[in-house]
Image 1 (cartoon, rainbow, N blue to C red):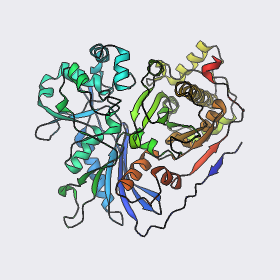
Image 2 (cartoon, rainbow, N blue to C red):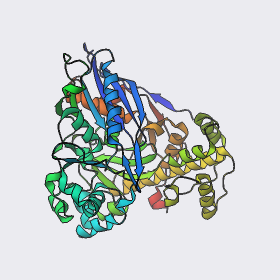
Image 3 (cartoon, one colour):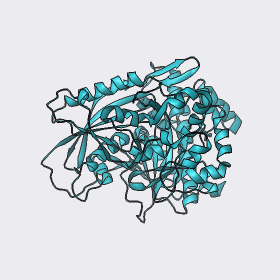
Image 4 (cartoon, one colour):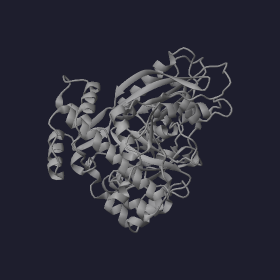
Length: 501
């Protein structure tokens, strides 16, 4: 079956002014800067800079080189100013949970630790204990239990870095730290703060009781602002010419997943046609958007998290295996091999040998991925794939099955049947995986935009400044700015995995 391409058509007024915005998207492996130009409620994007995220590994610890990263951001700003039309605003998004301790003089006290740093070992057990148990902690924060959350990281600080903690005036998440360097304003944006496991899920504010229970002080956490808050003009020393008007600095949805979900080209959450999203990349984040958090024991047991979304919504989602296993196999095969496109074509032509659970812990670490796959096949009692095409087909079949299981669990928790699944991010360009997800889930898959995080960042800026035409929402503009491809299940009605097993 060939995918059907849908191009949205929205009524709008022709804009007389074209506005430029700069989105800086920081990932754990690389970052990029994109200038977006809004024209007739359509965002056109131009990449101006791409760079590796600098990591420091020394003395048994892993941290981010914050000054080297700041140099890349300054270079991004410099290049953005050279784009014709000037620059109206700038914002930054990044990965979650990591933070920079800032002293009373406004300077970083040290590099921020990476969430992969081993210092956090055992700290999550302490977090559960001081919170009065697992259910109590989840009922308060609604955050999934991950050993590298901000909460256990702060516990590690309190245990190991008493001098640094005493000198800490505030802690800023990665994106917010660079927004501070750009504007001079210290804040925590709501979508980012909600990932920390230190925010009360019902109020959206820092839980002073939990912060006190771990031995910290609430004064070390900045005020929480909503997505789209204007922080002020860019600082003068960052301007290429003092006479030019400074762009404003805006706190978009600073958590990269929140920015991506903001650009999901879906109908509002109140629609009678329920939808879910899959943010598809190294990980697959499977979830939906709700008006209120779900804080039940069943939600915690299923591994779901409640994170703040655009306009006070809740992103109710679960982390599932993503393209990491395929990326690792390609790394093992070497850069001199076939292109990804040819590998996917070989997978489409290969016979399916079954599925394995790529969410098992053995697949989370690098190295020996092909052998891990073969061992898992042996354990599952299925034939191990032999050719490259068969290996990739097994990976994609297994990812599609994982998506289907997560969607079924989501439906069971929310009590509603998901009709459409929006796949955004880099994985949305994998047509075979999209079709297999539609087949195994029995749902319509709508793929795109691939650049959802950048698009959500840019459109959040435009809306904050009142630049979107009247009646046009961020998601309306996202549809106008994207190529959306529909995939229909070839297997008819799907039997929910939660009922079939």
